[in-house]
Image (tube, rainbow, N blue to C red; front, side, top):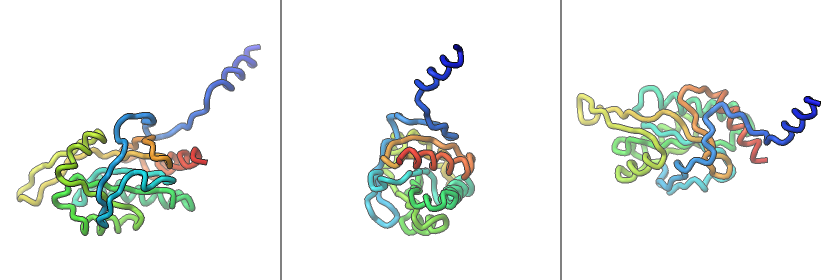
Length: 189
């Protein structure tokens, strides 16, 4: 008798994907962007419909977190195999003063030619950071151009319909993110 009750109960519960990253489905922030990419083209989240989009905020002169995160994202694309073309990596600079379009283009070439870099203007950056709930702060160096940028280190993941679904913490690993992206791609079919 108890077994039948358990079977009936489990049949009524909806099976939900078990993401390793933080599930933020339904969040009312990080709803999109309208920014110029490293090729001078205006980009919006809907431009990437049909792809899982991973958005990371950083800067090209970052010594550790940024290259590690972007390198991991390139590894994720490789781990996805034939599904790799369904991944769009997006790097958003928090240092538009130094990160020129040319520099951003060269930086992206280090990771994957399909990844894009977005460059908000100094005027756009504060509002963009607020809408994405990310932190960034200029830390003065010994010279005017030797400063660093403190910044948030996670990535936002959007499903193939452009809905914010996940926040993945820095250092989670390529296999973990690839697994979550595969779940999102499975949902799309």
